[in-house]
Image (tube, rainbow, N blue to C red):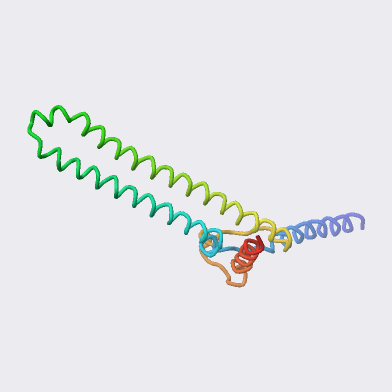
Length: 169
């Protein structure tokens, strides 16, 4: 009798533990991270700022290229002897233009990367907070899923929370 009772108790404990772990992992969801990122007002605001900076860079670059092109045209009209004396100046101007281009593109790319990381950190923070409040054990990025039930998609909720948070500021 004791053996039977011990067996039943053991079986119930195993089933209870298994059931609890299945239940704990039962609540999960997914988000379309790229859509959240695109729809986030902070992303849209930054894209406008970045476009303004890129336009200013392009205008400045165009001006510098025009100056160099004019210098280059004059340089080509010089005699071989005059070209030889101005070669260093010509090469310095060409190198300065290349360096300007490289530096500005690097600066814009670096600034963009830093801002994107900041925005992703905001998004991840909201997802984490929402998931903890709602009791989700796992939240996936939809890009890693082969199949997903649309009922598990919390993208709209996360996007709404993010955009409401930025409008309050």
